[in-house]
Every structure is written in C-alpha cells, then in structure tokens.
Length: 165
Image (cartoon, rainbow, N blue to C red; front, side, top):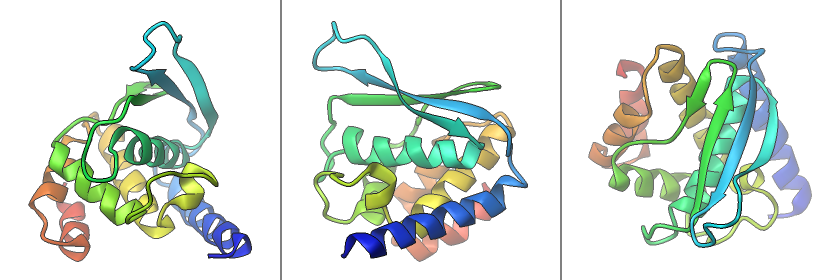
C-alpha cells in the first residue's frame, strides 16, 4: 500500500477516534510506557504520549498486538501499559483472544516499520480502543473483550458482541 494511502487511513482512524472522544474522556492526558523484558536492566520509558483516552488506547493496543503478541501467537519481549489521569491501564485477559485481535488488526505483518497505528487496520483498532475506553471509564479491564474475541468465530461475530460488554 502506498505511503499516501496509509497516511489517509491513519487520518481517517484519528478522525473517527476524535468523534468518539466526545463520549469517553476526551481531555485525558496519557502516556504509553514501554518495558523491555529481555534486557531487564533497561529502565521503563515513555514511548508516546498525548490527549484523549481512545487515541491513547489505540497506541497501547497497536504496540501490544504488534510487539507483545507476536505473529503465530508467541509472546514477545516488549510490554506496554498506559498511564492516564485516572490511573494505569494494562491489557489483561485471554491470550487466545489477544492472538485473534492481532490477526484482525495486523493480518500477517511481522513488524510495524512505518509506525504501530499506521500499520494497523484503522477501523478495527478504533473499535477495540473505543470499547476498552468504555470499559476503563466504567472501572473495568480488557478481560471481557479478550474473552469475547477468543469465543468469536470471526470479526463480525466479535464486533456484534461488543455492545453487550
């Protein structure tokens, strides 16, 4: 896909997330933190920061699904979490659900050379982040979403389950 097309998709994804921000913590300041689990002496560091919980969760999920959940379902050495005005968000839940989400977001890509969010399916990533933002705002974790992903036979079934979470 040409770089212009990737950037257009990214802008469309951000615009969609911006519309959703009006509903879920639009002014929340966040930071996505990175931790290298291979080199334990490497200190945790801020990988990206910004405003708007949905945008922050898009960044968190894209990194988690590209680096922590590897193609084929193996566990990578990178860990990420999000710190925001109301605390700390990690991605928790069913591993098989995470593997499925990775397939739906990144397909067969092994690496995210042009940026995590840029490489992702923007529509799918926005839906995942928006659902997680809604869960987080209600004091819940990503566990029900990952369980639904593990149980769903395909993306359409998974997406239909989200309003019930």
